[in-house]
Length: 414
Ligand SMILES: [Zn+2]
Image (cartoon, protein in one colour):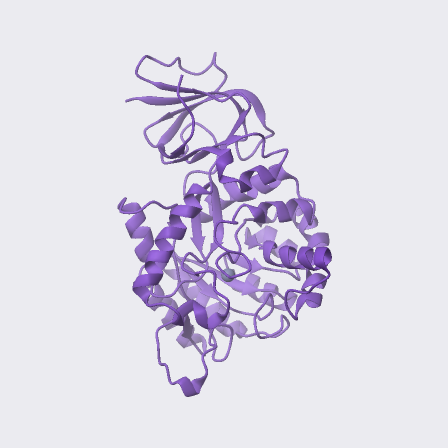
């Protein structure tokens, strides 16, 4: 079989410090060797060789909080009332390819209508369309009057949109089983308000019994479950139920961190949205929306607590609400800069969140450049471990490779 050789790269492997002048060999869908030119196989005439002087080779990234079918919406009604399901599926297909070409070889859904994640994943896996490896999410499971249960009763819609309204543990259990029947692999809950939603952060929008029932129903069928959780009370409730992913987790403290580390809970801080809004306000003096002062306070707390949580060993992953109007699809890698400039996480650590940790949540054998791992990798013009912002320009991605196949290749072989 013809092999692909990448030689002379600055290797960012997802775990260790960057290593200069490294050779990586790809055969089929996997990496078969990583080392120096002397301790890796020699290419034969039929192999393809790329010299990567001045370039970095790193694992593909995973967007771990993704709404593939949000079409840069301006309000909550836009999400499921503006277009029919068929049109939304086409939007989702376009975004999936854009995400992959932006360097994200994996994605974990965080809420979609019309079962689009499941269908999209099928189309990607069948090579009908281009897109990342997907862990599919379904509808938002919310209690009456919470979050995306936002259409007034007098509209008498009775529609199947983004929200599946559940009340009581039995109803949550049933809803989780319905989602799993539809092929969903990641369940989405809304245990608290806050982080842009209509109820403030300190309102528990699900009871402990409801959270417990939903998590138990997901886990008994081997599926994962995540929750929009902001307050400390909510985080502790999620941990008590053994939820897999805490989305946002703004008000975490030492007690929360201890539980997260002990249970191996993934955390998606999704700081890009508040960071972008607050930076805009600081630059222009103008508030983008009314809740900006509260958001700024929350952001300052995040800046203090995230480095401590990172130090303690919390498994952070990246991902945010791309597809809402103020942060359109395509801006994906701008999120990485927020963790460097805000809480002061090093670019290399942020890359580990995006790669190794992301693949662990995705449940796929990638995210690390090592022999035997999936050849999901990027060749970057420059060194993102020094300057994370170079990942924001898709022109700097000389190669996007998924499963050993080139999605993008701007290089000429030797
Ligand atoms: Zn979201």
